[in-house]
Amino acid sequence: MTSNARLVLADAGEAADLAAFLVRLLRFDRAAAVRLQVVGRFGGAGGSRGGAGAEGGGEAAPEGAAGVLAVFGRLPLGSSGAIAVRTARLAGPDAPVDRTVSAGRLLDDVDESADTVTLPAPVTGPAWAGLLPPRTGWRLLAEPPAVEVVPELMAAVREFKERSEAVPEHHRTRAVLDGLADEIWSRPLSAVPELPLRAAHASYVIGFLKPDARLTVHRAGSWLRLSAPAGSIAVRTAAAPGAGLGLSPLRG
Image (cartoon, rainbow, N blue to C red; front, side):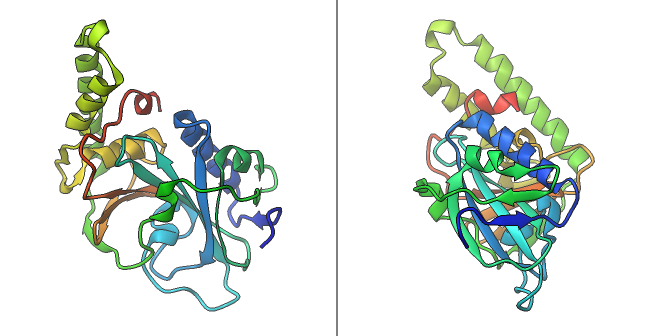
């Protein structure tokens, strides 16, 4: 598929939602890149609104079926980070795509009025783009109620703010704040102890986690995925030591 190929999204308003996702991602990193994949529809996953999407389970639909656009972006939440995934159903079959592009250029090429996306030229991808969550093999772990997850998350956000503000200004370095953030966001989520609170935080700041959202948690090997109707967050269980979230994610 050529760089200037245009993808037509199946659902009205989907282009606007994709644009909002990219805007949030760019708040964390103005030079952010995203990896794009266009694949066949998957039997075990809903394509639109991001839930499991292209990284869900199931087998590809027969040739000629409508496809799914999956957009993967990394939230720079320390060296371990978190990968946000937004998917959208396509109006018809399209040739497979797998490329990394500038998030800013992609945002410029989203036509909200026509619900289309024009593919920008590929760029040299960052290291994380070469290691994405698996497409199949996910096993359901839990379905935590959002009404329990959100209050716990907000309490942790308040704790981070209060404790960071209590650090004397001359000691309030990025390393100190990252260490504090890592302490807080590495804690297990009470409703799903296998999942770090970092995943819920990432889902919240990127706009996926809502108080009334239906949440699911899946595992595939060393990957964990927190899914909501608007999108998914994938994290590795073998997190690198010292991975912190810092201050910037709290602005979402």
